Length: 89
Image (cartoon, rainbow, N blue to C red; front, side, top):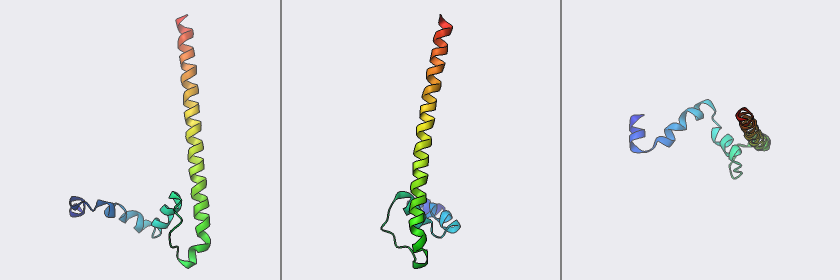
């Protein structure tokens, strides 16, 4: 392992564990990135579209949650500032 890191080939070592846990990690990662030019095995072609759909939903949910947390954080800051100003009166 140390020789892989020392020689600069660490990116292959970093992908070893995910591939051991999920042999189709590359296909799932391609779906998450929206990359469609990937060769799916014939027996999995029917599920390929579902993988892309689920990945798109996950991206949309993450974006929605990020927007909500940002809006909530700004609202909290606004209320804290107003409370501080009321305390100064």
